[in-house]
Image (cartoon, rainbow, N blue to C red; front, side, top):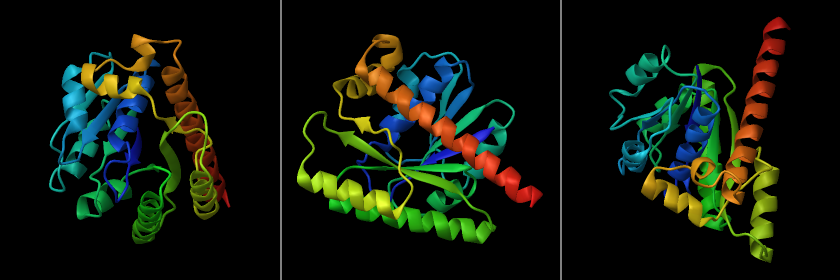
Amino acid sequence: MITIALASNKGGCAKTTTACALATDLALDGLRTCILDCDPNQHAAAFGRRASVPGFAVVPNVGEETVIEEIRNARSTCDFLILDLPGVASRLTILGIGKSAFVIVPCQQSAPDLRDALRTNHQIDETGDIGNRQIGRALLWTRVPSGFESRVAKQIRADGETRMPTFSASVMERTAYKEMLLTGIPPRVSAPESAAAANIQAVKAELLDRLASLDAAVRTEALA
């Protein structure tokens, strides 16, 4: 089982949207995928009640007292476990990051969002130091408008990409993602040829590549 966390010290950065889109897309590939909804708002749990994707499930109301147990329980039933962590720095966030192989840090192209993303990156470093291991991570730009990119957005993007690993793909601002959370139907099902479906598949493909590279690096280090 591969455990992936969606973490950010700032709410409203499309963390849950990204978690639900990626999880259902992996499930549509035939992989058993589960989200642990650790966010007090429980938006992923609400999505899970609406969704009907084979191999996909959401465990609601996961807190710091139960997160480790739920991760253990998922080992025999999941290929991918995705943690939708709360949008604040907390013990629950640290526990989730500490049990993850890779952390996606969603971030909008604004100075406050980038500042909180970099704080999350520092928290990942500190959590890895506690466990004496390197935790993979990458910043993921979210809610990116299609078309013109402002000078400020370009500057923020350049600043972020020089300060932590960053996905080449971005999650664009699309109505289809809002509809997905409302209906429980991911874009790959509702509109398989759409830009929204292709967008999530591009993020997923890059995530899988990064996981493969991380696994290869760990194997090389173990042999050294």
